[in-house]
Image 1: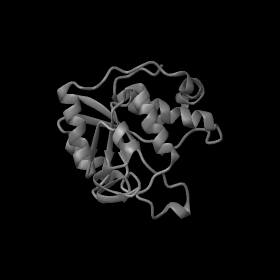
Image 2 (image 1 turned 45 degrees about the vertical axis):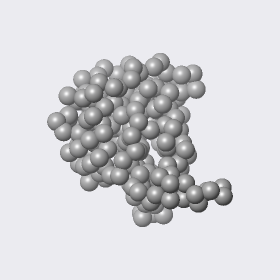
Image 3 (image 1 turned 120 degrees about the vertical axis):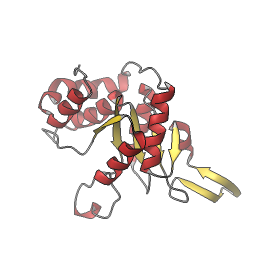
Amino acid sequence: MKVSVYCSGSIAKGVSDVRKLTWSDTERMEVAKGAEPHDVVFLNPDDPITDPRNTLGQFGRDMYQVMVATAVVVDAREKRGLGIGVEMAAAGTFGTPVIVVAPPNSKYRADLLEYRGVTVHDYVHPHVAALSAAIVDDFLAAGEALAELVTAGTLPEKTDVPGWLERAIGEYRDNVLAGDVPMLEALRRLDRIPG
């Protein structure tokens, strides 16, 4: 079965981001391997966009990809920013499952944490815990979690586009998608008609 994954995580935006952990072919190969026998189509927010000045369309592209994805896999190996939180919240709104890669004793997950005067065992950041269908150690395990969701038939029904996202997704669909070659190719691979 063909499934799609939105690759949520930091994008290298310039020279200062060279040391950031970001999605690469290595992470995608691990997810694909874990998801076997399913064929994974990756939706990449870092693919070139036809008009980078169209910020509403760019945001709409990300939200469109989150909406059409079978699941969102979040790279939470290190501290992430506002965009990833919005993507996770939007996924929850759409009914798109979120799988978070957060290794033990990393920013969003700890065996032991001293927090607000108490000791917390097996800590997971509250936002990550609340918005995730699965929290895993690595990308291979993320693919395995995806395969389990698909095989078990536990993928929720997708909801309509909420008002707070409708304008951005409409901008992308109406004014950007026709020239977005990587996304059109992904939709062809998924046998989906844009619209």
